[in-house]
Image (tube, rainbow, N blue to C red; front, side):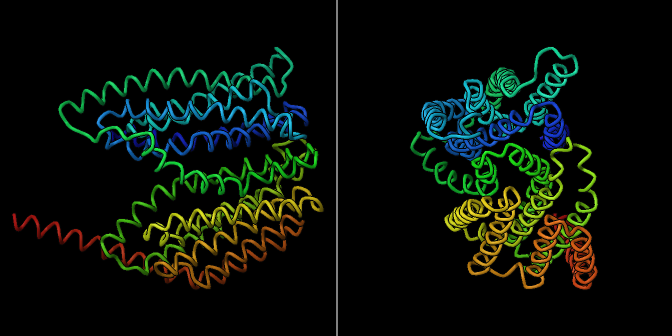
Length: 481
């Protein structure tokens, strides 16, 4: 992979997240409240559609890409399976449309269904382009639709070309997805020919059968679905009560708070290769707990900064959505807790406890949906998101403790204490006790610094020692030569 591709792979997700951060607040100014609520449902429906109807085959494509004799034929086989599943997904949308009332039903239109199918195909082709290592092509693929959406909607609104409505916005989404699909088909064919030429006489594995692909991919769907459902179900549940404003407020909070997914993505990209390599090289296992401490302190600082900035975010939205900052902090807290969970549950990956991971996600989704259904009846969107936060705390504890049972302890009592502080501060902020929440975090950071400082010194010493050992090994190898 060349330098340009590495840079493109790094920057493109950040740009996409930045567009998401800007796009949703802008749309809240341009769309009527009822249309904005339907758009929130549209986003959730599309994500569920692509997640389920893809059958996890984008992961199977990634798994088999470098082992297949012909990646292009592999893509063709995967697309055939996905297209066979599409009619089932469309029938499900029709059933929801005519049997479920409220915003969930109102958001399902022919344009919405077309967007679902097109975005599903985008997902599969994007996976192929990403696995080819062509970072520039991948960056163009995922960034261009966002640029088109924002540019077209901005042009329509600024020049009053037509009345901006839910149907128009969804139509623009479908059109941008279609444009991306044309690019993806052309680029995938070009990449496929290039890979065939490079392979030459090299032999790869025979093309996996449809059954083999599905055997690998299908077990991935329930866990991914459950994890997404933990937070996304809140929008459905709030929408079931028919309050458009609360649906929009919830969606805005989740969309903006979801910007932290960039941090999760970057951290996961760096953490997983390093952690598994350290484990394979039999490095000092205490490092994992120390990394958990560093991450926990980072999460405390990010949360404090978010609380200081959140009240000013009301300037981004119309006044009627002034409840966004209070809900936003809850979303930020659970995204930060996920970072700690990534480190604390490392043993699940080491011991290949995939069934355990899936079970935890399903349990978290059940807790989130159950509690949200009850709490939202009395406290609306706030009750739903507080329930989601509770579900994330439970899944964090289960992930870390079951990882400990299968491997070794990474997250200890002092980590859990800070998790409790972050959750409590988030709840306090959402209930209107902003200064008290900020004070709690400041006190926690000052107290935790006594644990944090020696850990920094110890981690620095470990890496410095590892670096010296590596240098010595190179010197010895050169001397032997």
